[in-house]
Length: 404
Image (cartoon, rainbow, N blue to C red; front, side, top):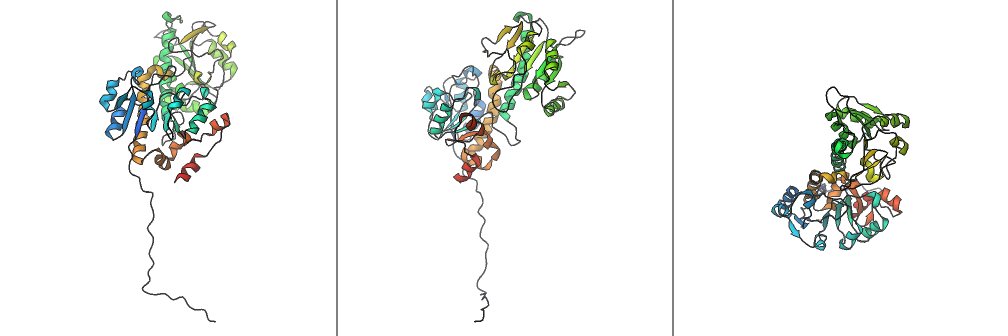
């Protein structure tokens, strides 16, 4: 049988189908709750009255617990004038679908948490417990941590701001404790014409180290920086704009420098877990009487063997004649500046989430924000936490893709 040729009718036309585009959803109204923090030494608040005013004028609701901003010198009146609703019941604040905290979630918060709530807060790895994570997972919480939150340039904006505050503050504190009134050496940090400059040793060339070095140099001190990353040492020199005395952390060189310094700053950080302890008790015992140690990395264990956690009320202790300042969460001592810095990051983030129609839709479009999520609808999405507490890990990208 002869094969038939295909018959093409002139009345038949081929048309392309429309392409389906990812259409931007309608904006959503966010209900945001800010509780008063009861955690040890937490004076910050995550949104300032100015930020609340912007959110409210864009149609969002903000509920704030009575006196939540008091420690940062923001009064209830400032918030109510900005358009927030002040409430006196803790439970009422926790009913908000989005909770913004300046301290980590603690055991006492768990009964108040709602199903499917979004929580934006810091996460203190040193005190975190697996039971707490498990209870949050049971409530299908979506949790975003300050520490892991990235902006579109790939940096961590809140950590950076807090590190800038801590680095700058450390030198002010060192200058304070070197004074005679505080049993210090009676030395003016930096020095004056005709007198050799005071010597400052900085361990760690990250953001804290850089800002501590800037402040010390501005006061006229002689600065020496140790770090095991040559890249970070180069970056610090480039950012400061001139060559500094730098070295990798070599115990003999470090011990020799510590013997003759007036101020030693511990600003080492670690990707996960504890900070490396690089200064032994013996090195500290050989330091000059009246010199000052400021261990900024005490939040994660500290890098001096003699360090012990102190508080803002009793910030220092003396060991081997050396003044030790080991207050965790230094930015909380400068609560107003720290609150403004956190607020500058969170307010635009909340605004964006509102415009996109909620956090879930925002994460679909803004991939860089995904690193900040350690729990998504009750699934643990942070690999480090799952390894540490032996809990099930789920890939966030897969979760988000499966929601579409």
